[in-house]
Image (cartoon, rainbow, N blue to C red; front, side):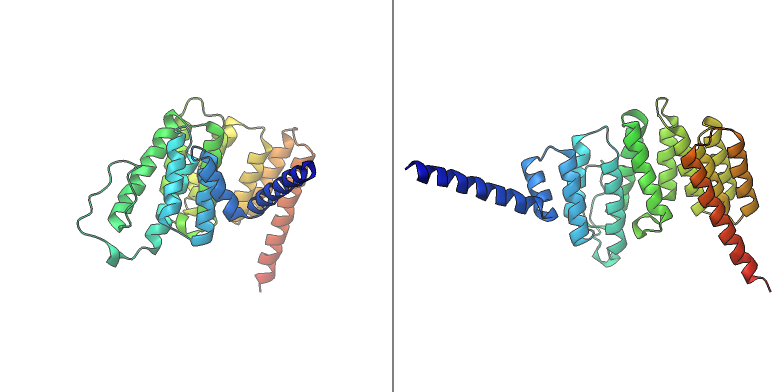
Length: 279
């Protein structure tokens, strides 16, 4: 009887281990069981929403799980920005012929999603307002910075859901800059500079880059980014001047030196292409 009992215990443990391994080895099942077992977890809801988006493309269920996550933590803006982008995806693929004439527009960011063009545009504006509200009054500065930078990167990369969000990203960045206790305002200015660059506003690009460096003049990362912006504008000699000025400050470490060398290599390569095109 004892041998039978031990065998049963071992068999049960083996089955439990196999089941757990099967769940953990599959992203779909893992994210599903996580959100099922932890419905009050922001991370579980966000991860499941992201997994649904990867598997299905834009869909209402993904939006709902991002909404669930956003309501669980009112200090968080990343889930709201994901909601905003998911609305853009849904609008992009939504045919105007599917709209309904009798749909009342939403009044709050957490109103239920209705797959109607006018409704989703109005809902997107409400989500945008909630992002601003949280950034100004309640958000975690570090996660806010990462979320806004991620949205800016999406815009810079030309992803379809972010092609029209430049004005929104600038407003989010301005809201962060208006927060007295925001921890990294130079990066917010850098984000704005990059967004303005995508819009062809070179004067505003330079202004925001100067604002960033004025706040943190010895931060070599900012000097490298400024040089990169001039390379993007094909102003190679000016980019070299930026690098030399940064080196003259006397605070360049080994990592910075390698980064500046990469920039110089890029400048040399770009110049060689220009010279090769001359008759």
